[in-house]
Length: 150
Length: 150
DNA sequence: CAGTTTGTTTAGTATAAACTAAACAAACTA
DNA sequence: TAGTTTGTTTAGTTTATACTAAACAAACTG
Image (tube, rainbow over all chains, first blue to last red; front, side, top):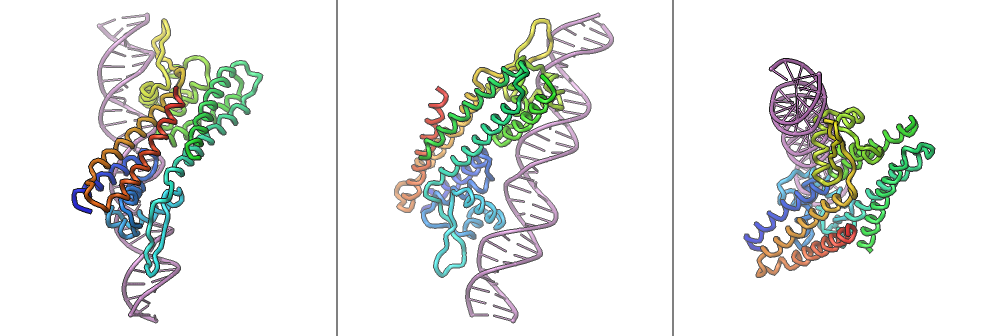
């Protein structure tokens, strides 16, 4: 891969770091993803540390995070002691599952609140209505996400 | 509204604060939303500050943020100097618009990267493919969100 | 066995952002 | 006009967390 492309990759890596951050993930996690998107062969632990100029501790925590999220996988090679990493088949699926989980949590909180509110208090009928609207919205959001991953 | 319900509301307020945080918004913004969901009448600036035990500075910044996001609106009352706030008609619409914007940004970054990569380098064909997969995914995500808000 | 290469964990630092207190400005009231 | 009541802005503090450096443990090599 020639130098010009290497510059493009560098930029992409940094932009992925920022996007990752705005998704609530550490910057380094996004940068690791970017590397694994851009290079065909599995990338080793120490290669990641060098390529991103980042401590081995950070590589460890962030690869573990991404593995846990189901976005990358750890692979090994015969006769090699290092760990390698590659993108998983559908990395974005697990992102969706994360969103889905948070949505479910939201509807749970709303339902719980609605059930706990005492019905004999007339002043809460507006609140009940707005809570229902909110729940309905989150439910349709959730099913849209689910449709996307099936 | 009786005391038991007031406790339920307190809990809901705090949970909304946490959910807000995991959506990338300040805790106080979520708590303000919760208040406006739970009470029918518009809530005043100083009421918010007292109810949430939060500085007036924070009320100012966070109400402005929520107004900017299109989730609440500032209203005034004849003969009153204070500002009041109420939920907007469809508060969740603007949340979706935020997600949509970030998705658009992602596809832009991907496209830009793809165009900048030199095609004469054979080693990037895998990268191109993975970038396309990523873009395709974000595009269908975006259109799912759009369907939701129309 | 001693020494190296690996990944993890921990303790400490750096950084970013939320929040507060207080100064401020504008609009009102007496 | 002097004094309040309002919302905003700013400077400083607090808090959360990403990140690093270094200690560590496990697996390997000679």
